[in-house]
Image (cartoon, rainbow, N blue to C red; front, side, top):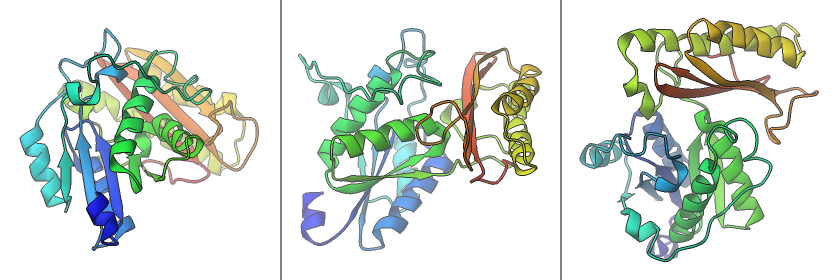
Length: 274
């Protein structure tokens, strides 16, 4: 990386946990667009153990490094960094990074320690990569806000960019966890973008009551979800409950079968999901 920067090349960086799909490749292409054809684009592939809870899917999270490297090459990625856990968490390590307030709402209560694990590994990766443009998907909206705040607060030489959610033809947000869904569950999951789209259209028609928007989304999701962690309407930057403004984040987390899915839309900014 230092050699590239010394030669005047900008560095684009996309941290991932692998099992790459078109959403990830969109991030790589965005990184390329940001740094230009003469720049260097790096992708990290690391299934980070500290962001998984004891009852989550760390052990079965898909790992397909060889195929991921091929996908990266197809997207014009220059460097793939795939360390093992011992390299990122050497024996005796003690440090964790916590971003207060932004880690507390939404997924925070349902995945204790998750954002601390994310913030810790990304801080390590940012330190290794150095000055760069780091690109994240806004499907993981809270994560993007946490990492943006982290880079700013710690004065890291990293520009954190968020890219709008990449969706399947029916509007479902692309996710490595979609492969866990059966055909029947996959059909049910189509209700998620439908509910978010309905909220966006209601907003465009003038609705500004957060409780009303939340209720309509929740009603749609209860028809298909086995459980719902949350349906929230929040300020898109602070993640505090929405009170007033020209934009609002509508964020959801639910389980269909055993698969936990998240999605969101920033109404007033983004078009309704298809």
